Image 1 (cartoon, helix red, strand yellow):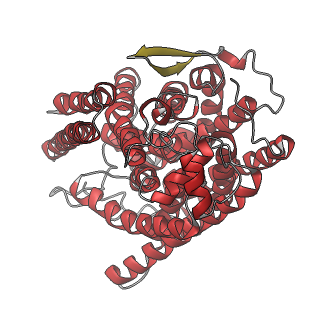
Image 2 (tube, chains in turn brown, orange):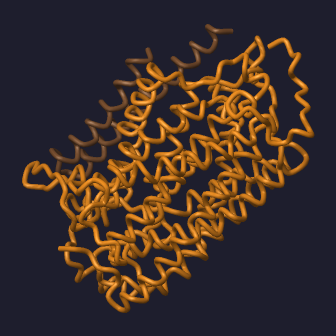
Image 3 (cartoon, chains in turn blue, red):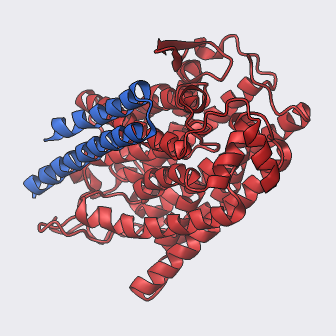
Amino acid sequence: MKVTGLLMMPSGWFIVLTALILLRGVVAQDLFVAAGAGVEILGLVLFTRSHLMVKRGHE
Amino acid sequence: MSPQLPAAAPELSQAFCIFFIFLLPLALAGLALINTGLSRSRSAAHSMMATLCVMGVAAAAYFVTGFAWQGYPGLPAHTLTIFGKEWSWLGAGNFFLRGLPLNGSPASLAALLQMLSVGLAALIPLGAAAERWRLRACCLSTVILAGITYPLFAHWVWGGGWLGRLGQNYGLGAGFLDAGGSSTIQAVGGLTALSMVWLLGPRRGKYNLEGMPAALPGHNTVYVLFGCILALVGWMGLNAAGSILFAHIEPGRTVLVAVNTLLAASGAVLAAAAITRYRFGKPDASLSANGWVCGLVASSAGCAYVPPAAALLIGLVAGALVTFTVAWMEAHLGLDDPAGAISAHALGGVWGILAVGLFPRTVKVAYLIVTGVAPGVIPSREMLAQAIANAPHPAMVPGGQMLAQIVGVATLVGFVLPLTYSLNWLLNRFVPQRIPPEEERHGADLYELGAGAYPEFMTHTDEFSQW
């Protein structure tokens, strides 16, 4: 879960960059940037949860 | 084209800039006092010693590689051309500041400012990882921050990099805006703090066997609150110098910068004091101090662009944000952050960045400053409309400024956080970063320095606790 979360954050960032480079329509660009940001947030949540699980495992 | 200081009076701008940069060490002193006051007495000397070491290492690392990789608009840089647009991704200057005349040129002033502000960024993780971070490890981690992470992101924002040019290349407002370093200094430092808290884990005794956090109050509230006042002076210098060097404002406009900085901090501390008074029955000094710092942090990005009322609003939101998130992260995310650095610097920085895109008038003013149409004045409504119509690159996408700010935040979360975590994880494999938990009982002072900060007053009430 930790590695998945860590990899999802840059993946979301690449989606954001790709939207900037490839898309010209305002709506499409906004949507893809939002999607990229969503992937990043999902990665951050997974990464955080993986640390919580490690902490609970130690308890 | 090499950038110049604002044209009206370059010597005046230079003098103002040098004066403001000389105020910046007060921000470091303030943050050092806050970090020390919020940690326990058994690690107070270690905290101050680590501050000095980290400042030294940060300045040295920035001198060796940092400025070469950060660069400054007009200096050499590595670029990629993607679909006809130039993406500058790394400075290509000389190591050891070779070839940079230290004569008051904008680039040399930027180098001086950055040698200090990278130290400020490096102090942020010290507060979050207090009482359990080895001295040697925090110095090595600072090399990573000051030599790699910070310059890379700062190049993208301040060094003529792709984030700062989103306006010119893609019509996103005036490009990513951050005059005083909410992103480059504060959020980068805050995300490094988050990485360190994840890597080191909580302090011994912070969580009981059921996972409930215990209160481990700081040892000196007076240090903390005095540190806040020192930090204000330093922050005014940081925001003003950054605004002259990176937002290219006229010196007279630094009055607005200082007013905005003060108002944001004021709004934040009042919001934090009022909320903690409402929640706990009495205002909480340490959370109010966190609110003050969060207000300063959030003020930095838009200090040169927003009107004073907006700065106050930004501060109020920052104060509210920090009071709720400090407790929430401690209780629900298991993040033991004695100085509240993750909330105040990372979240406060992100809020400051996004706030710039929220106010339409601010976006227009920023656009005029960045395009050089009206760098030194606060334009009237008519002047704004006329200047926008005649602006040099008028391709302003509606909502584009907010999109540029979001791309900046996405870069922090999607690039800076994984990078800093991975590099520090790697460092931890070779140099264990955490003080052994059994040694934490006696404090970092005794373990690392061999003597405590207050030898006459050694009372550690939890030495015989069971966890």
